[in-house]
Length: 618
Image: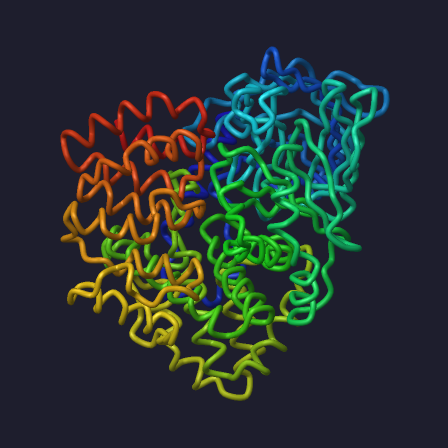
């Protein structure tokens, strides 16, 4: 049984690799090379969780009940697992024992769990325990939290880590509703990607319900000493008491943001939209778990300057959560649309010049990523080829910024009014469904270019989606505010003292652009002058700090090294960690420093960051 399941995954990989670009526009679907599930035979439609959270053993234990739609009257249900201890499996209300087999472990994918069922079985119950090393789960000691008093747990299921804490059909193309009962220590609050409580209860037992179908990567749980404060009728923020006040200030515009999003692309479909500010070890900027975005504390800059990240996660409520990439090869459909929508939200709230700055910073990130990958690398394609690889490898600025750039070409080609009508209809028509690249392109051609198919053919779409590098017809964006920053950089290089530059009205985006435009040939004296004038080493803005530290490493500006070490130990966001460690290991002395810091910092990082950095630092 497990051999057949393994073979299925191998066949799927081969099938995807053999796809040619000539027949892509006529293809309707592809198998998911990152899942053992066979949803065309039998698919999970609803799951019920009943789990106990044990901080001492660092495990979740209990059962999951899965409601099945057996489409073909198959005698086997295939699920995804990774390092789970399966205690027993039963079927139906009478809980009759079910025979099951765990397949051979496959790198990145884990093991297929094959359950022998009869066609009339509608529900199975799996009793299991997670591993203390479950990759989706991060168990934090009290010392690793803001309050320093209680432990903390959070999950990160994207891309295929849900299978490390629930036996499940772990594919973005499969959706289910869920309910849950979670038992936690009485002094802690449990939250999920569902309807949530706002206060603790004495029993430490919490129930949850998500009545809209979601993919497995959006299944989320967090447990900690958390408090809640409302930001408006439909929005609020959860955080540890020590960071709640700061979080409430930072996200004051959240209700306005939700209104701006609805104005552009229609009604928000999920009811409430709340934020949870996690401890610093969270490996991403944010995670768009429905109803409850998980957010990094690195965006708590004190001046609301980094809230475009919140606009991004909010935008995911449409692009990603509502219409979901069918496989991780189609990741750009989630992220390209979300970056585009994020910038539209920011433009609606703060004006086009502000959104243009964000777009230009994103363009800089894209160009740097293409340079790092190589312009002929297949990883610079929008449609990825991730068979046999960890889908996390597809998380780069290509999906985000090249995806955004492609959609901007479409907007400029047909006009914003026509484009917006198309996108709004796209979200409505395919709500709570998955979408692959080929079906999207077919829909795009049929709907947006029905009256002008020749225009579609002239857009370099094949090159954008399946080609490497950046097509020549990318939209050029300019920013008057950044032009003024470029002038200031030039004046400084020509001898104007840093303290005399006209920087008084600059936003954090202008400061970030300023640091990025500084020459690589800076010396210690110049670094010292800039630091004395602008206090970069002491900045409370994580984006500015990370960019400044890259220059500090390159010039070996030692006054910044204590702050650099503190930053690397206290911040778990992979976006910042990877380039800083990469910069350090370029020299023998820096390599030694990197290993010394990493030895202290590694216990604070989530598996997602550790997986990347272990490979980088050997």
